[in-house]
Structures are given as structure tokens and as C-alpha cells.
Image (cartoon, rainbow, N blue to C red; front, top):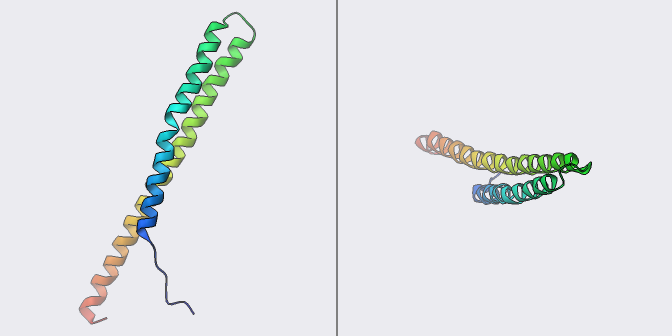
Length: 101
């Protein structure tokens, strides 16, 4: 039978940092690809594919931004969980110590 559980808040914080790094790292590639597609669309103005290239550029930028924001939010949630676990652990210690536990 298990004796309880433990949470490694350092691991949560490390995962939070890694997740935020991925989110931040996706910003530039998304912008670059979107900008490149927009340049192509402008250069090909008048051709049938120009509007499609512009739409692809906008969609690419939006989707990469959405994924990056998701990673950033996940990092924030992991950090929040680490803080919550530590706060709860301290509350239990504060509650039990006066009673000699």
C-alpha cells in the first residue's frame, strides 16, 4: 500500500520553462513564414495563385501563433501547479506541527 504521494515541483518548474521556451521559439518562425508567403503573394499580384498564397501566409502565421500560445499557457499552468502544491504542503505542515505530528 502506498504511503501517499509526492510532487516534484522542481520538475514541474523545469517543464514550465521548457514549455514557455517552445512557445517563445515558435513566434519568429511563424512570423517569418507568414511574411515570406505575403511577399510571394505581393510579387505574384495578378496571378491566380496570389490570393491563395496570401491566405496560406495568414493561416500559417495564425496557426503557428496558436500553437506557441498553447505552449506558453501550458508553461504558466505548470508553474501555477508547482506554486499550489508548495502552498498546500506548507499549509499541512503549519497545521500539523503545532499538534506534534
